[in-house]
Length: 262
Image 1 (spheres, rainbow, N blue to C red):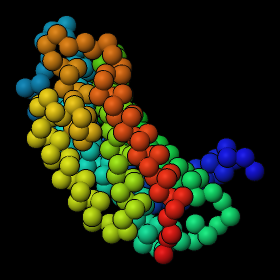
Image 2: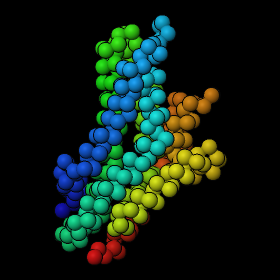
Image 3: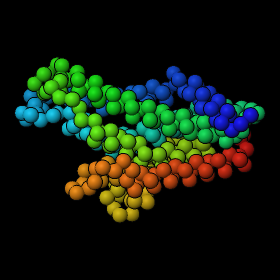
Image 4: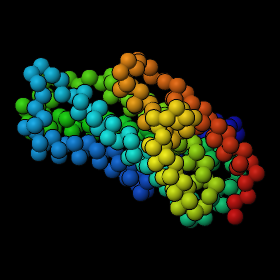
């Protein structure tokens, strides 16, 4: 059978296993968390949030939520979700069973990695839809906020979310590889948290350009700099993030070729 068949079947199997797991529902809850907070805030504090006449309230409403999620929630979520997806296999000793099946080891690894990245993309999509729904509900409850008077300006929020997603792929690759290699759930989780906090601390430094755990903030921060171009869908940190993702994907492939699961 050809490699495409093995890869497709692996992705299908991993997607079926993911359904109704804690990791899946964590993704949904995480996507709804910030929009729910902003919905409550706007409903309760609407008097101080009434926009100026002729002002479209959507961009501020959506961009503020993206920025609120970007600093800590998104990286921490990625670390937790990648660790959880692999931990299910380690905990039940299913990894040993998977590697005993007459299927290529690489298809197991890349199938899980693809589903992990897909789940994170799904979370971004749900987050975007939840922001729109929250704004529409707020506008229906408090018409003076003018949410129903204007159409959302999708370009900047979508660009921010796209840049953020590409920028975190490097973290996905690293954390997935760590979680695959280390059976103990706490170790890759702890390493990831320390590196995320480090990224938040140093992202303004010039050296952070080479530190993938700072890329999420760099991808969003640069779009708000005075004079910074907001036309780029792929800034330099996005390209570097893709590079890290590919490097650790290849490293994982080389690892599983010699890995002896016990």
